[in-house]
Image (cartoon, rainbow, N blue to C red; front, side, top):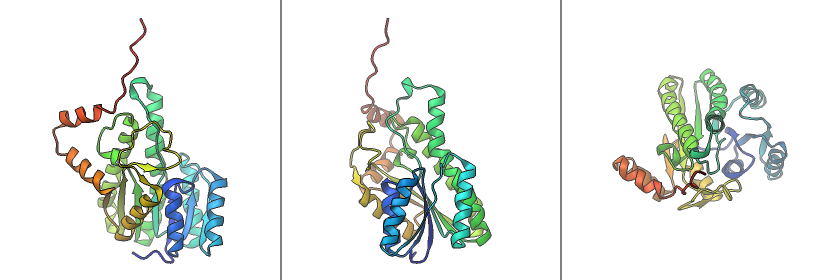
Length: 260
């Protein structure tokens, strides 16, 4: 795939990997629609892209609001006539220990990693069905393959989204819609700097963005990176579960003993 003149919607574009991917796509001639909650950061990104001769429409919205997400998609189509590629890049979580959490906290992190994808996915699919073409990409996580300590609700949400997208490949394939699920390992971003999570084999935002562009360009159905983490995940999925659990448990900090 060549990105020149392609209309690309990026959800979660105000910072981190989404922002870097937006600037790299603009440099290749893509026309960008960027959305996230922060109007200030989005406007700064759009101004940067425009100053370099690119085209970028900034549409601030809260991805937890389904109606707002639908308006973003409608506005993008009204402005550019189409959405060729949608990169659904919203979500994230700090270190979250379920041993100290209540149900509402667990469901909150599910919502901020599952609902935020669904809210954009289905308006985009409705548009692409009418066009009978399009590429939907989702930034998932390697945590979506395993129950990772300190990331339980996040892992569950990413696993649920992985299965949803896999089903979409089957149900929407007749309309010529393609799907790419992208699984980063640990990426050094502003939001992950103090999140309390161990980060083995961490890579930079710029490196991660190059991986994402490769996955989009090649329309990879499933793309795991970096290479070393990809093979560790594959190994973990064939090892006996008790062995994997013992390895993962090493990253789990002890709880203070209960009082009394």
